[in-house]
Length: 459
Image (cartoon, one colour):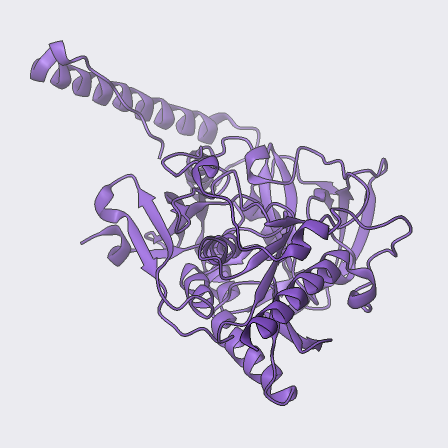
């Protein structure tokens, strides 16, 4: 039975195998290989003995009594988190929380975080949650919870402390780029009901759909939103903006399904695992819900994982024009493997590849039209992309981005789009996106020009 039929595979949110090889030269033959294997086994037995000795010494001499279960769970988590930023151990409670979250409802603050270099970093706040309303930003570093440092906490422990009963208060201390002093952000926990899809009509019969996360409702929500927009506008929908900015990802099957809403046939994404029999490919399995009308996808550094699968597929099939900034670069597959005791481990088992063979890992998806959010070159504390993390999985096995032929189908207006907002452009106001969201404005300019060009060619 293969890996894909035994375990629960997720594209997973950005959150947080030891591989040892002994190479023997051809001249050693079978005897040399056997010797190398015996030596490796001996080393492993010695290390396991050391582990047992350390655990016994801790039990006997640590300043306070230590729970055996906690020690073992910490050891397991340390083994997994030492591999890459996304492998980790989940105890029974954390595993249950993850299952609830993928259904689109959970308790807490509405914030996606990852661990890097011993710090807890914000990947993205989720729309309409306490974190988003308080102005938490991608790249913020959480340094303390209720005044207590997060140094020494695992990612799971930090997330567990941020969750709690609805209406309970917590204060996050964050370190933000370009801000010299720590920022204290008081938040009130809520039961998070994620409305993953929002939509509205824009001028010139252009629809806008915002997808904030790839939960189980993503594909159905996209279909319903486009259907409602078309009905609302008397059957007219000349183009679409699909906003995947700050979308940290989610379920792999939903990424494939959403891509299939715009691409009728062909590959959507493939994965390559350590064992060839565990590699897979997913093809389009739907109809184009836009009936060929132009699509612009908005992306930025907070667009990760499943968002990058959709962006890469629509870009490679020339089905959409990508506007914004380079995506996060989380191109690895995590397989959730249930363990005895109702816990699970999240293990990186493969890399994602776009239809053209590009690996997303640590590179991300480059937009077709680069448009920055602000005029300022934003500094960062340690970077905001996957490539900036410690122990990041390498980008390997894919087609070089330079080997992929540049697009020749971009509208003429793409060359006229400014890379930055003009001087004096207003600060972003969520209540006035059409007036203050520069990336959206330029995306609308692109898709409107494409729609006009399509109408002209049809006449």
